[in-house]
View 1 (cartoon, rainbow, N blue to C red):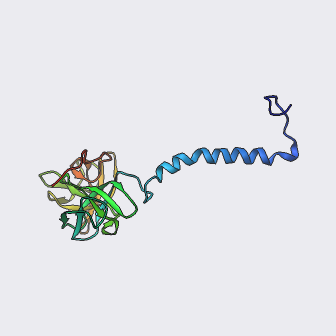
View 2 (tube, rainbow, N blue to C red):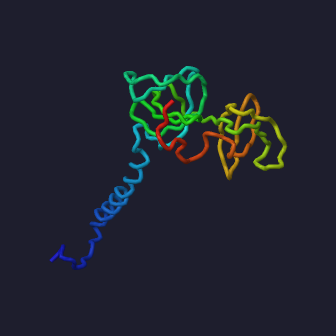
View 3 (tube, rainbow, N blue to C red):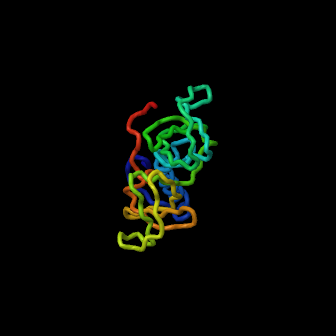
Amino acid sequence: MDGQGEPHLIERDNWAAPLFAAVLLCALSCLPAQAADRATPSGYPVPRYITLKFDEVYARAGPGEDHRLLWVYRVKGLPVQVVAENSEWRRVCDPSGGVAWVHKRLTDGRRNVLIAQATRVAVRKKPKADAQIVAYLNPRSLAALTRCDKGWCKVRLDGASGWTQARGLWGVSDALQCKAPARR
């Protein structure tokens, strides 16, 4: 009585079917993890950082041009954190704590950072506190982000490139930057 829990031998000629079933089962078990990574309309994780593509970007109360205009961003390259999205709009958190919706065509996937501390920040040749200083970043200035590693971030600005400590930068933390929707 096959199918009642008794073991049975797989015939040598019929080895492909069980192998195919095992491979299919393994592939299907991997789908939920991949689907979770692609759960957003863009396929990118939320939260994540992007930049504003233009020096005039309209921030709206909701995802659509029919929603109330809240303010206008006037800083090309400003890093913002995407906290929600639909197919055409991104809900972003800005370095001042503002939360608004911007159209995806007004954003860029490149990463920038904003100097968030009140004093200038040294950019060093290597990711070490005693490494040679190659430039300084002024408070509230922007720099292109290359990568971060072990508390240090490699940045580029006006022909200079080097490392600075991550703790003084806005645009690198994995945590949500806006805990509650802020209004301006």
